[in-house]
Length: 605
Image (cartoon, rainbow, N blue to C red):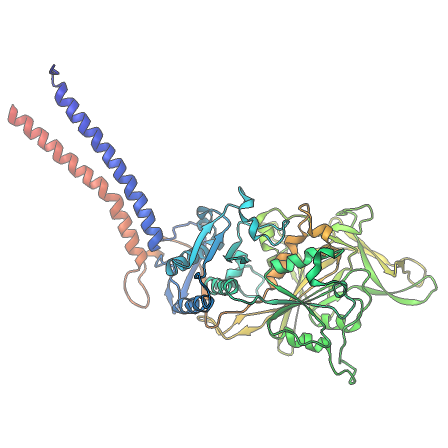
């Protein structure tokens, strides 16, 4: 039966319209998916984020914001080609490297500190598609996704961390490690982006055969001297500390600093709970081997030293005199014992306000203020906003050396940062700065201290027990600026030496490192990684940063070296055209159809 009154024609036209709509919708979807895949694979990006950010220049030409492209330097490509060639020698299967980000791509592109890092990783993947793979994990919603990369089962991996892995080897970096900072400035603004160098270094580390070495001194009565590294399961204490050191990327070796040569690949010397002093040639011409002199020569190579003492550690004039040159003084005082004899005693911190026990001898350390190297070492933890409790016990306070000048930074009410101090000194061509990493007490709740010797509380000449109140450092970090001739537009970059002093050995006990309730593992990992010195790629420069605000003019400017309109301008023009084109086409098509219908109707009439 035929449909009357034009229903057949209407049905036919309606079906055609519906089919056309479906085809257009499917086509738009396919075009979006295809363009997204094409932009990702061909690396067509332009950064339109509204935040204040940085523009990267190389040879006076804007490579990042203006062009929209994140281009690898030829030196980076050549260096990694050599690294992969060396790594593949003798392998049946070619080496594979995975760069793992710990947050979702949308969050990475929004974060000022992570955006360049993320795009650099994608550029590496594009350059080496058969070797390098970029992936993502959301460590907040799925923390177990990175369990295999945890240094211990109790360590935390943060969204700002970047993991570079190959086989069973991996390295974890913070966002900060991809930038170069001016250690003489009190601001936390980077002066250069060294992401390509950092990735090249870590790729070399995980594909190479040798890891940097951490040497544990064993000739000063340290507890490690009594235990075998190969049988850690039988250790009564501190076996978790070994896992933390290895998790920071080090191979562990024992070192008799007096008789052994420091291994060539050693980057960190660690002295833990010494009971006898270092040998020093200062004032003693008969000394043939000076441990402090060997340590000083080691630190002049831009390497690091870390020492743990506590309130029971005997006075060590030679070692403590050397630490004073680095701005670090363990607090001791002269007092009188029960027999009226003058003896040197140790300060012991009692922090009742932050106590973990009834005595206040075991307490929760307070995170650093400000933007110095102490805060930088804890930047991942502080940025995450969690600040897990870091426990110190039987702690001896650490002061800035009396030979150093004290710098004061006023409180920043806008950012909620209290006032804080640091120490600095320049002598004989060196420049050193010292910051606290952890402290006891607060300005509102001061910690107490007493002075003891062998468990006996010392008194003054009137028989009054020595003591007082204050805010005391329990972990400090000293850095000496060391410059090397490298950089675009700069003659030098900073490759510092570090000395870290800890006023408690209990911070490293298994009871605290082996517990999810405390942040001791994260704190020590952060410090070790911050001080870490691995093999640096030669010839890879950082890119100087200039603080700029994104605006339209920035994207439309002309390249200063070629005189040609930037790629960003072309991309924006193409975006406008592609956005307007469908509307124009549909408008023209509509007009054509409307004119034809009117013409047809007038003809029939």
